[in-house]
Image (cartoon, rainbow, N blue to C red):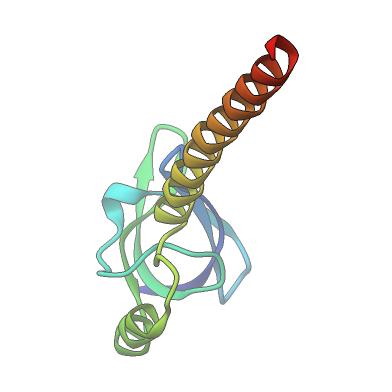
Length: 118
């Protein structure tokens, strides 16, 4: 198995690239080939098999090299572990902020109308 480092990963599209340690060649990989328990992140050292595809060589059976420390780092973090969870949390916060802002605006308008009519 070859060893390398995750060079890029786009969680929205579900694929990324691994830079091979020996020759710095980039290999495409899809999230379905991920064999780790933790999130996929740039900079993680991995081992992988190389398979041929219609578009050239790809990484298969991608396994993080130090899975134990990755799990403990994920559990120790107070923030959500994956980027997807962070984006979801942020979207939820923005939605809550919009509702609170609209309620505050409605309150200000009600006070202005009450003061104007009295």
